Length: 281
Length: 281
Image 1 (cartoon, helix red, strand yellow):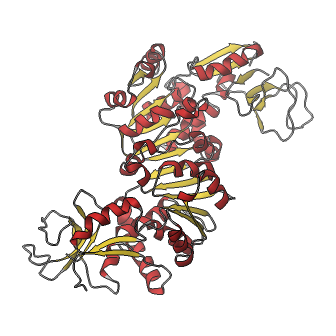
Image 2: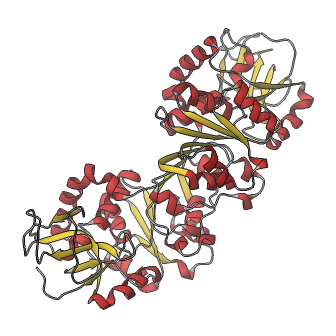
Image 3: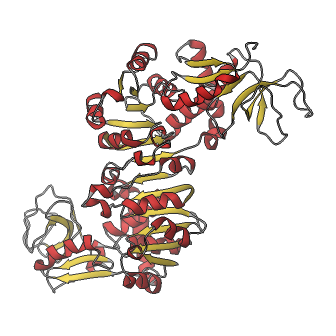
C-alpha cells in the first residue's frame, strides 16, 4: 500500500491507495494503483466484493485522491452546494475549519462569493485560515467564553449557512445567531463523540421561528449525481491554483495510531494522511 | 366578535372572526364577517393596515375557518405534505396528537395511506385517537418511563416521519428510533416553552448516519403555493366525512384566560376556541 487515509469506516479499515502485488481478478493486474476501503496495513488481501476502483494516472499527486479529489473533497462539495444551497453574498460559518473538509468548504464558499468565517482550536490555525486560505475571518474557540456572543461579533448580520463538523455548544450558539431560512449541514460532531453530555441542546423555538433546516448527510448518497461536476470543477480550481490543498502527512505504518488519535485532538491542519512507503507515482 | 382562536400571536392578539359594526373602509360594510388577527375582545378597533379578509358565506360552521379550514388546518397540511414529503406506507409519529394540528396531521397521514401513531397526555385522549380518529395506535407518554423504548414498541420497523409539536425528550427518543432519511417537521415545542432545561439534546451522530432532516416552519411562508389545494382537498374530506373535526369551545370573553392557560396543560381535545356571542351564522 502507498497511502492510508486515517479517517476510519471501521476500527481498522479506511480509504487506502495501494498497488496490486498479485491479482486473481482479471480487472486488475500487478502494478495497478487502486483506491478502496482496505485494512490499515502495508499488505492486505482484498476480497472480490470489496468496493474499489483503479486509479488512472493523473496530473495530481496520488494523495489528492484521498483528500481534495476523494471523499473529503466530495463531502465538502456536496455538503456545501447541495445541502446548504448557497447564494452569493451569504454568510457562511465553518467549524473545524482547518480540517480536511472544513478547509475545503471555506474555500468553495469563498470562490462562490460568500462571506466566510471559520473556527479552530489554535492561533496558529487562525493565522493559517486568514493568511493562506483567505477566509474573511477566523477565531480560536478555546479563547472565547461565550460562543454565542463571539458569533454575534463575527456575524453582526447573522449566519445563513453553517457547515457543522463539531456539534455541541457551537451548534447551540449558531442557532442563536442564525438568520431566517438558515441551513445547517451536519457533517460531523467531534465534540460529542467521546462525551454524550456535550450534545447540542437546540433552541427549537428558534428553529421554528427562523425556519431553520438541520440536515445530516453521508456523501456516497449524493455522489452519483454530482461526481462528474465535482471532479471537473475541483480539478480546474487545482490547475488554476485557486484551491489550496493542505495535507498533513506522516510516514510509516507505525504512525497510524498517533495519526488517528491526533484527529480528535485537533493536531492536524488539512487532510491527515499516512504514507506507508516512500516510493510513489 | 364571534369567535376567538386562543392561539395567540401576541399577548392579547389572535386569529378572530368578527362582524363589522361600523366601517370607514369601503371594502367592508356593516354586517360583513371578517377573519383577521385582532385583539381578544368583544369589540375592537381595526386599523387599515391590519391583515384581514372578508369571509364569504360557506357550507361549513364559522369556527371551521379558525381551525380545520384556517391556520391550524393549513399548518397540518403543509407541514405534513410539503415538509415531511410522505410516501404511502411510511410510518408517521405525531406528538400532541389530540391538539388542533396534531389531530389533523394524523388524519391526513391516515387518509394518505401511512401508518400513524400519536402520543398524548391521558388515557381519555388515547381512546379518542384510536376510536374516533382511527389512528393505528396511540399511547399516553405520562405512563411511560423510557420514551425511546416505548417508541421501539410502537414502531418496530422505525419511524419515517415525525410531526413534532412538543420538542424535548420526545424528540431525542424519536431520533433514536428514526429510519434512514427520516424527516422531522418542527411545528411546536410545548415541552420547552416554560423550561429551557427541557430542550432536546440531539444525538447528532444519529442525525448524520441516518441522514435525518429536522426543519422548522411557519405556515404563512408556504400558504401562497398551497392554499388552493389545501382548501379543495380539505373541503372535500369534510363533505365526505372522512376528516373528523374536533373543537373544544368555551363561551364568553371571561373564558379566554383559562382557555389560553389550558393549552399548556393539555386540557383541550382538538381546536380550542372561545365563542364570544351565541348569535352566529
